[in-house]
Length: 454
Image (cartoon, rainbow, N blue to C red; front, side):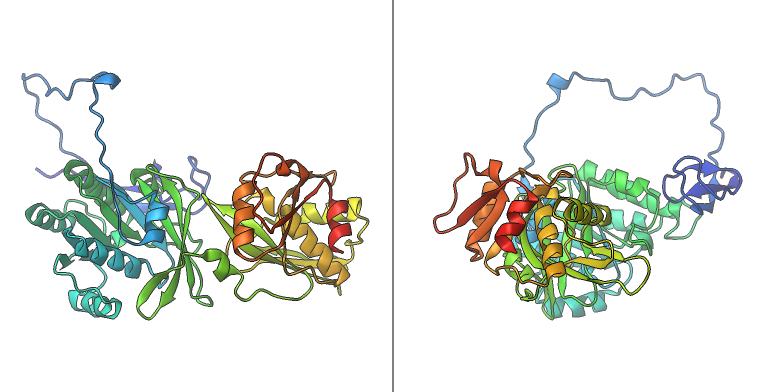
């Protein structure tokens, strides 16, 4: 006999349940996240005299067999880099991003590449027909006989087909369109997304078949559905970019099998997503020659990337000067402006300051402090900085230039890009190999940098 149904309110962020609606979730303190869902209570179990079924016995950690699953390359270098070197057997991977950013395009290219390597790939589409996917595959040049398409949204039917065809890889586009027949709510609801993802997770772990899930995002840019979805999967990837730029950045925010600091850079073309193996060249291709432009080498995982920081400083036309930062922390920019005013005697209290990281990257490391500070000073003085000079270093509140990590790798990247001079912390010069032909100038404080450059 079917169980009774009841209505509860469930938080879309953390999954907290309440019998009545609340404006603020008491578990995660988020506003307006409780949504009404219908749940079916399980029927009461009949009393029997038989003892309960026993589960698996615990075993010692030393007795657990250690198997080297290895990784499977997608033959897309930038995707393999973000995944930590390739796809791990039995992993559940969630990829999200704005509509039209290229999620389905990249996964279709990866699926075709795996199929051409001899693997059997099942691509499940819940938003398009098989004919529409085939049209896109023709544009991308994907035509492998080992790539199979399935247009379905019922999880039970999809898993049945997977058990019959035994694919090596499974792609589900998208998780918000899937539904389970034993869950009464509609597809895309909190309960459906959670239960469907749980079904695919069990399939991946039991069969060893890696599963890719495409996820929609909300207005705020977060993955739609319950927050528990990100906890269930092994890897969470975000596709970043905008309509004004053809470049896309694939970033890992969670990875149980690799680093979360790596990024992959692609360019959207008519033939699909093309890799950008040298992001430094791409970031500096349209570099400005005006005052307020400075270059630094930022570490994105294990790879140094040269980026340009642009500063525009002008006398304010209003009572309070404006401060605006794009691609770099706003509070960090305000701190650097205060250091310039206090330690270098530059008057910025009546100046508007606009700081931008060109190319769409976001800098989160202090090694970019010196470049940002010098760019602001250059914009204030309206003096151009040497085009062949890069800036590395963290700036302290007393104006000192503090040492940074991976200085040698950053210097090598500057040298390969054609820079002849690099300003960096004096303490970083000890024990590192400087490329021949590169002038590495050690500085101790902000005053030294400004005297040399301005």
